[in-house]
Length: 193
Image (cartoon, rainbow, N blue to C red; front, side):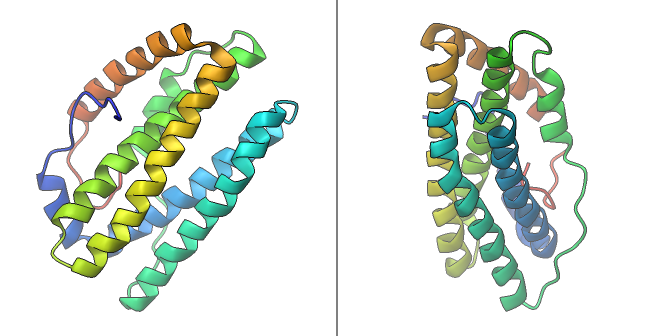
């Protein structure tokens, strides 16, 4: 369903499990940034009323996810660390086409959001299947389901505003770029991406 062209190296789960405080910290900030990304889309494109209406509940949901991850940290007597630079997301942002119409820029932003959600979904699925803790597997299963829905929403919105044919072609370009990006990044258990 996600179409990702390079699956995450299975060793990532083991590294993440050994770096639980760090990966939960990164996860918390990912949820916060997802909420912020939706707020930014609403601020920049308030006249896209259908999109605004669909993103408002996502803002609430993502902020709720941030609170859930904070609660998980606290329950495990772990601390929220500092936010770190996200090489993965920054590379996707650099890949966005610059210029074009306002609508073109919106479609690019929606595709970046979709790809981040797709990779997060894939990673959360891995955690939900392979972590030693049954409790954490269930915790991450909920996130996997949510991220899949967000991915689908962003793709559908991109098609709504960019046209089905254009978005299908551009999405393949994103997937090809992301494959190369994933192959170039070090496998790190302290990051979601």
